[in-house]
Amino acid sequence: MVELAPSYERFAYAYDRIMYNVDYHRWADYIQKIFRHHSESPTSILDVACGTGALTFILSELGYQMTGVDLAEGMLEIARQKSIDLGIVAAFKPGDMRNFDLGEQFDTVICTYDSINYMRDEDEFASACRQASIHLKPDGIFIFDVTTERNIARHFHGQTFAENHEDYAYIWQNIYSKRDQICRTTLTFFIQENNLFRRFEELHVQRIFDNGLIKKILQRCGYDVIGMYDMYTFNRPGRFSDRVNFVARKT
Ligand SMILES: C[S@@+](CC[C@H](N)C(=O)[O-])C[C@H]1O[C@@H](n2cnc3c(N)ncnc32)[C@H](O)[C@@H]1O
Image 1 (cartoon, helix red, strand yellow):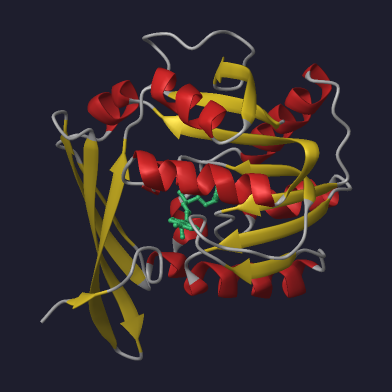
Image 2 (cartoon, helix red, strand yellow):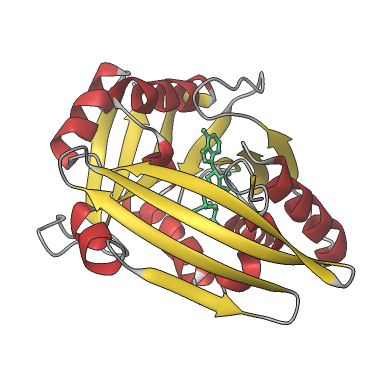
């Protein structure tokens, strides 16, 4: 019998090890370049969908006051434990990017690594943009990236990834429907509990949004779109872009 777990609750166990090849330092560096490019010098940053805090901690070390929010308590537990282990100060709070309210405002809100692709339709995307805006000081900027259809079609659709470790194993299967612009990922985990392995399954659903539609949603939610870049650059995104970075100012 397979136990169905909410997204990222079991993934959290091995997330940092599975993502070992993600260069979060390069990501933090790019975010700082975006600040300089747009003459921003924020003090406080809210990291929406912060996960286990990989980027949150690097930005904290760089001197920003960091707060992370995530839907998955499993991811937040790891982030809080890392905060203790690493001795790096950052606040981690539970929240759904579609409707959370921390009751405070930040100079910048970020949402990285395709997290906003978890919004399933235009309304959800707009809710996430509005909640980000509620948490931004006047003129603050919202930086987020989206994965592109090219990335999903070339690197995920129809593909299965698997790893086998001493204490866990996983199978990661992806199917993209071009018609719905939806990528469905089934993650099957086998995680060691005492001398046995328990099997869990997570279903992840991510939606692809066209850049033009994202711009319209942002404008509708009261933002000026001040940047739309091919990942890690300041170039216009094109048909070869795998990830697109948006920078929007709260008006
Ligand atoms: C690909 S991970 C990225 C995590 C982190 N930003 C990083 O770069 O490692 C996506 C994250 O989005 C979170 N997430 C998905 N839907 C969410 C929602 N509605 N509200 C808040 N977080 C959400 C997941 O729990 C997960 O931690």
